[in-house]
Length: 207
Image 1 (spheres, rainbow, N blue to C red):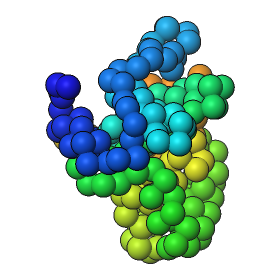
Image 2: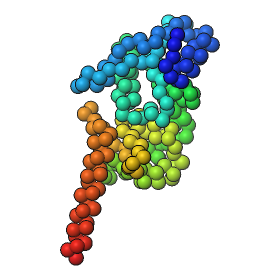
Image 3: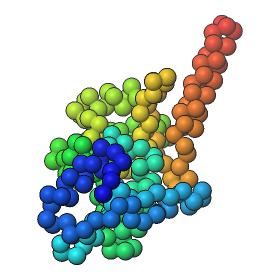
Image 4: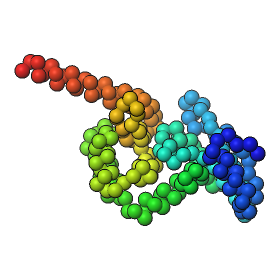
């Protein structure tokens, strides 16, 4: 069977050595993850295990686990698998990291204090976001890393916007069913920043 990226290549090599996998299907089912615009995606593989159970597989680099698109696809996949009685896995084959492993690591490290401080910082702003500088300080205080950020995002349905090359703004924002696009959040923050800076300059000139 052909592969189209490194993740899929490693997955196929694993299946060749795994006797507990009876069969697998490439791109098994198209799933809607955004009903308003009828956006769909297809999981990478469907595995049928030796005990007859079925597992859907999403292969994604772990640093993208908490991005907006991956989150929406993952929640749609979980709902689909719940309806059909399947299992599902979000996995980074290159690094051997799964979402389940990240959750286990989180519990082992006892990151509840880190989680509490981040959420309280967001609530204090009432706009439900914090900038990358504040987040970085909290992460350093609790010894948190990118793996912990991934779990924090999934546990609390947050949106993680990493720093870009042109912008040094990194936000975590709480979202609802009508979640804003990441770019709109950044642009809105930029607008507020420049507006407040302009107002400050006006006050300074008046003085």
